[in-house]
Amino acid sequence: MIIAEHLAKNFQVKVGKGIFREKKSIEAVKDISLQIEKGKIVGLLGINGAGKTTTIKMLTTLLAPSAGTYFMDDMDAVKYPMEIKKRINMIAGGERMIYWRLTAYENLWYYGQIYNVPNSILKQRIEELLALVGLEGKQNIPVETFSKGMKQRLQIARGLINDPEYLFLDEPTIGLDAVVSKELRSHIKFLAQEKNKGILLTSHYMREIEELCDYIYILNDGCLIKQGTARELAADTFNRRNYILKLYEQSDDILARLDHNLRQYDPTTEVSGDGDCISINSSENISLELSRLCTQEGLFIREMYEKEPELEDTIIKLSKEVSA
Ligand SMILES: Nc1ncnc2c1ncn2[C@@H]1O[C@H](COP(=O)(O)OP(=O)(O)O)[C@@H](O)[C@H]1O
Ligand SMILES: [Mg+2]
Image (cartoon, rainbow, N blue to C red; front, side, top):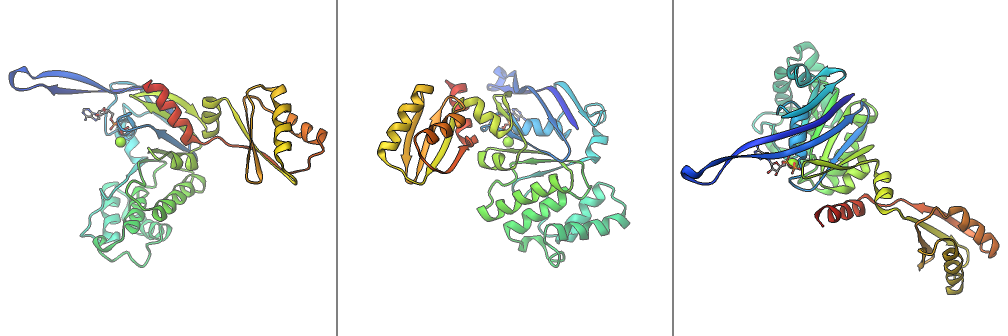
């Protein structure tokens, strides 16, 4: 497990002109604590400039933290960055880190050498990885002829060349079309669930984080502002519950009766009809009350469930709160 506590990163920059140039310290990351478990996907979500990339650079040992501690499976990652590098890998969005003139096989061979993978193991691993990402048969073609999707699949293979225990993905689907990003998301899930990799993913696409992540950290201005599962975050932010009720019979009169009765229980309840659905919004858990009421009113329930709040709404609300 990765345990990072109170990570901070300051950058010294020069501002101003000529002899008036002075040094200024920028706090890109102020205080971030997080954990990554093997087999789980953790998300870092935040608007541009929130500190996501700086955090990932510290976790991948590309940057030394200005403060804080970072342990990977009980090893001090700040003291032993070279040991940590062997056990991790990073996949960034876009087309960096692959050589266009080389074939897929040559790219993977090159990165295998960098990670000192013994040749006997490397040959077999490359074949397995090419099969994993569906590039077998294309291995001897220069990468410059590849489609965006194929290049992205090669990136995944490259990120797995050292068989890392932890994988860091910085905006992995940026610039990809819907079909390719969907494919990439299912690969990411597979790597956590079937290959037991611990994965940290940054994105500003809320849907992506919501779909993939077991646990989410929300960053703003270098600090953590919220953390939890998608469901917890949304419930915590809204403190309201949404129910969908479908009856065998529906009318304005029924809506009015439900509205009246539920308001006795929670005065803030809102009942509205939407096609053949009745949507109910309440600050309380009213599921029992709702079924009791239907029985009492002689209404037959076709379907009833609590609707999950969406993370996208949560982030929009949180960002408004922070900037207000
Ligand atoms: N090398 C650097 N030198 C100075 N400032 C930096 C450097 N890298 C990042 N920053 C600043 O730190 C803040 C966080 O940046 P970053 O981690 O890239 O955020 P994100 O990835 O969430 O968009 C930004 O204000 C950015 O301008
Ligand atoms: Mg970034």
